[in-house]
Amino acid sequence: MPFDLPPLQEIGEQIEREDYPFEFLPANGADRPVDLLLVSLGEESGVSLVIEMIFVNDLLLTMGIPEEYDDAMVLQFLLRLPIAFEPGAAPELALFLATLSRVMPAGAFGLSEEDGTVYHQYALHLPTRAAETEVLVSVIAGTHALLRILLPEIKEVAAGTLKRQEALKRLSGKGVNIPGMGPGPVARAQAALKTLP
Image (cartoon, rainbow, N blue to C red; front, side):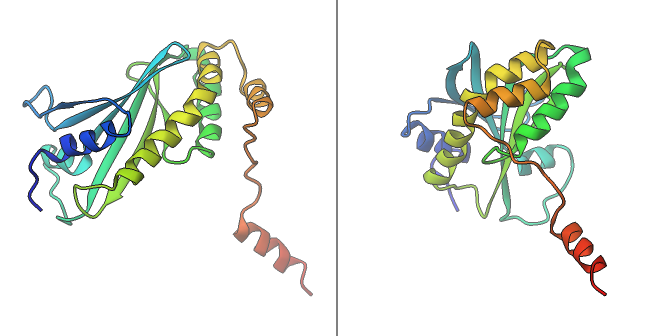
């Protein structure tokens, strides 16, 4: 499908109509090997939030990995939180982020050991390089809404001044109750079979 503008720039213009300012940065060689879309979410809890969007397909091609399916596109949303974590806080923070990831509407949190920061990442699978505005805004707005609530606790756990269990108690006080994992359906079925004569 031909595009009047680069696909990420078109996506930026769709998102901007929903009050998310953007900047489109075209690929420029080694410094930026693929087109990049920056979407601003503003500032929350003293942290500037910017989502970086790329088509993973383009990145794979620059790495010499051929595409198997020409029409299957993966649009990656990456939000690098400018929150440095203390090395000693990494295990507690990793457990906390894994727990938080269970309630994110899309994607999951991770830790970057390279620069000692926290990120949130999501991959949206699309049939083409076009995406419905409602889908894009749903991912962005849902992530943004939860980050508004979660950022203060993430910052404190990253700094090592708050333990994971205390952070979860605080979030519960804000109405964010994260359900336990418990045994899954396979384990429950196996346990039930053991009780049969």
